[in-house]
Length: 176
Picture 1: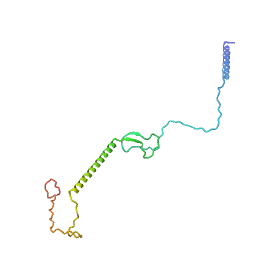
Picture 2: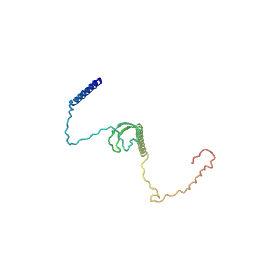
Picture 3: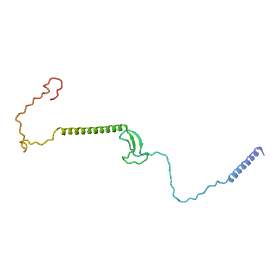
Picture 4: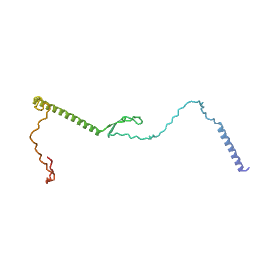
């Protein structure tokens, strides 16, 4: 036998032994144990948790008619609110100053009215003390509804007023 034939036989024997070893190894392994569950019909709840952003179909602009600093929020994101319900409290310095000024004007007007009442009462008291009580007097000729006699003196005619065109001075002249 030639050297090549010996080598070829040796390679064939090694190959057969290797294949037999691999087959024995594969067959000797035990399959893993799998737990078995019995399926029964029942109701289940499907929960889907996703991350996303919700955008409304209609945007609503919420703003105050008066400027100011937000000092307290009365509603949170997602809360349902009714129309006209306050959503925040504002500190409005301009409106507070205006309110204080209006309150001061009201107090001043009330004080002025009280002062006018007192002045009127003083004047009324002085008028009562200074003059005797009036008694109605009956004048002859007027007691029974007769007309008052006219005075025999004629009226004096009025002096004519000067016209603006007659005055040649450039200074304005006020009507008398």
